Image (cartoon, rainbow, N blue to C red):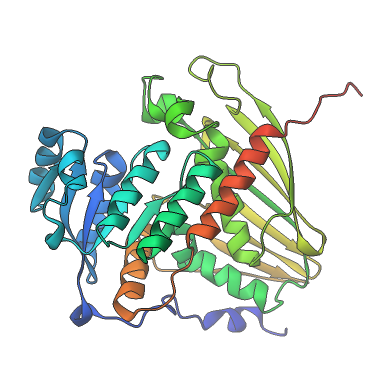
Length: 359
């Protein structure tokens, strides 16, 4: 490869798009009106040419109605009204952004109403409930996509393309990390659902953060995990009910690829992914946080190049991808089976702490 930079120049950032504004919009009912919906999802859809939010749903009617008024959305419904099919003719698809353990019931309702589903990751609090979600959508013949926004990020898609092209040779190792200070920078009250196993599932850091480097690696390598091994730690106030205030885990992929990941809900906010091959490496740093513009560096032999990308809103990319697939009738990926693999991996990681040995 005589000119790495020239090789890297040609790339279609939206190679997946076939629909345009004239084909849409896809109208969404968003279930859950927490900060992720109000600050991330709803603004992303408002900026989209393919999507529109027409319904917001919360457990209580008053909260839903207030959020709808604040965001200029036509309908604010209670969960009971949503389940009864109120305003069902005014939306085409459902976005699920509730605590993990409430995903199944919401998806079952959407499927019963014949609505395609975009469900936040992780798709449920257990593999058993994730399987039930898949069954509900298959029985109703409605599409199910799991909201792995990294898979529609142009930086990540470029990395996947470079790996597939053999740019850095055969993959040998992957190193990834994601952390944030949940109780210092985001929520001061430890009595919240991400630290409640009944709502979030059995973990906190692995379930909410570690799945980012894990799933992004799966996408970039186009491979699924074969085995996992982990070490977990929880000691500080607020993390008494979860095993993984801090977590480190190794994942074995096919062809002898080993990935080392770490995650913490009580550490400095940062994220990166480094893919090491026999001929070079690809680094995404920073990575994973929607508020940071991801960087991509590629090195091969003595050559290295940094690739510049126009800033994108990962949520807008994700919603547009889902809408494009619905409008053109094409297959959706990542689907429910893809999300289920992560749930099984997370359960194995949280159950697989390695015995400490004094050396």
